[in-house]
Length: 294
Ligand SMILES: [Fe+2]
Ligand SMILES: [Fe+2]
Image (tube, rainbow, N blue to C red; front, side, top):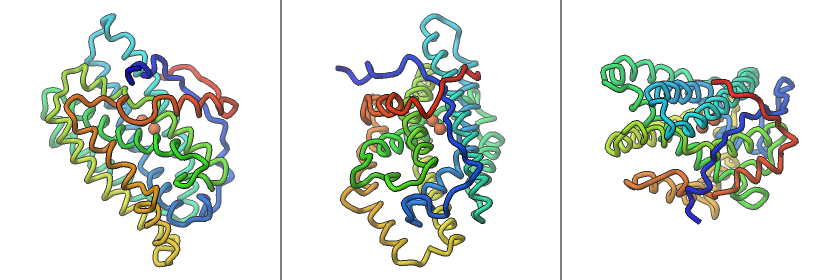
């Protein structure tokens, strides 16, 4: 079966039944300072990043003619926006708890400054600014899709990044992972449909790869430093195992990261075709479907 046949035709907007108001432990991810700091760093980037994706996809949608061939993509865009808006909302509540724990989000504000600068100096001067923003979105969405796929791939086995996590964060991360994997085609397909080219897709991908790696590293180190666990041997042991162990992240991301550089790449070519759907179906008691927000 062609992988594209697993592409969704419907993106459900799900309201997750989690209560983040009561907070969570400092080392909620299996008592592991590094695994907690890393996931917290990612969470810190989401509210700003996901708003950027929403804006980019909305701008692209406006430029996409209202024709019968585009109807399905336009429908998926509504679902995409609703899903990202829900992620944004929950990660903002999550991040408010991190503030209370004394962590400081540097990544979000830095990304925001970068976007303002990009709009003022670069995209704003282009004839089709939305194409740049969509290429950036598609690149980051490839990262979140890989993260989503890998999160679900080794559940309850060695290499499970959230196996020891406490609730409700375990469910929150796996739900977010499943939806990232589920909607991974939308920004990419919109970019292609609007005539976005390979050269700019690659330029922004290289930019995102460097920026994302350095941002996640800086924020994780900062979180560990504020947590006073940066210099503990157990932190470094966990980081090495996570990156370079038998199921290390570096080995697992290499192939899908490289796949994006192919001219004929499509997001459905990587990851497991039905894994996210299986998780969402199996945990349907944790969420309820809500109407489109676009
Ligand atoms: Fe998201
Ligand atoms: Fe996403």
